[in-house]
Amino acid sequence: MRKHLLLFFLFVCCLPLAGSSQTVLLDIDVAGDTVPPTKGKNLKHFVHMYMSYGFIGGIMETGARIRPESSSFYEFGFRYKRKISPTIATGLELAYRNDVYNLRQEKGKVIPDTVLHNREKLSFHILNLGWYMRVNYGKRGNSIGHFVDAGTYSDVNVHFTHFTQDKYPDGRIVKTTTQGLGIEELLSFGLVGRWGFGNLVITGRYRLTDALKPSTGLPDLPKGQLGLQLGFH
Image 1 (cartoon, one colour):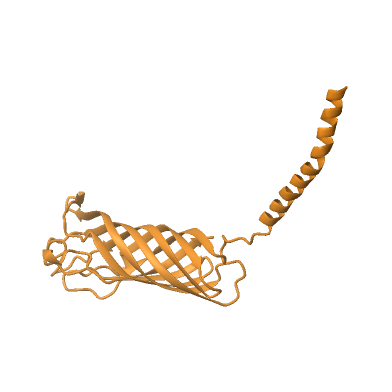
Image 2 (image 1 turned 135 degrees about the horizontal axis):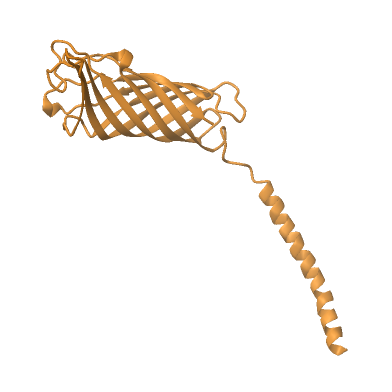
């Protein structure tokens, strides 16, 4: 009997403690619910994927003329945006890009040699790292909205290929793929600019360094790129 009374007494004594514990737990949960979110399109942190496609052009050096209408790039990457103020943000980008230069087959061509073909291309497979500053304008709520970006980038050329195609009088078509020419620079750097309208972005890039090694004595390839980018938000 005494044992049961003792257990009952202990149970009654613990009731206030249990009620107090429940109150603390409830307070903690409510506090957690009131923490403002920090991840979102127009919040402190935001990460999204993007794809780009465009054309390569610019000043052409003698012996390194290309066909801009068929010289192009495509890109797939990830972008991190860090909001600094309602109008200013900064961020980093990591992407894969493929630059393809369609060489003009004309007298005076010297890249990578003077041999003329029916078709000839240089393909750069690139790992791209970029940094940018962003200025937002207009009303946008929790969306990307309208913006202007300016930044820099660095490229690592991870794979370089030379393609040719020749058609002979007997109808044969011979295609060649050559690697290991050793004429390409490993690293390159440049400037980037963008004008964005939500998911759709006009993007431009200008390379400040040479794409081909100066030690080869070859003229450099055109440095400009202009295209469209689609952001997956």
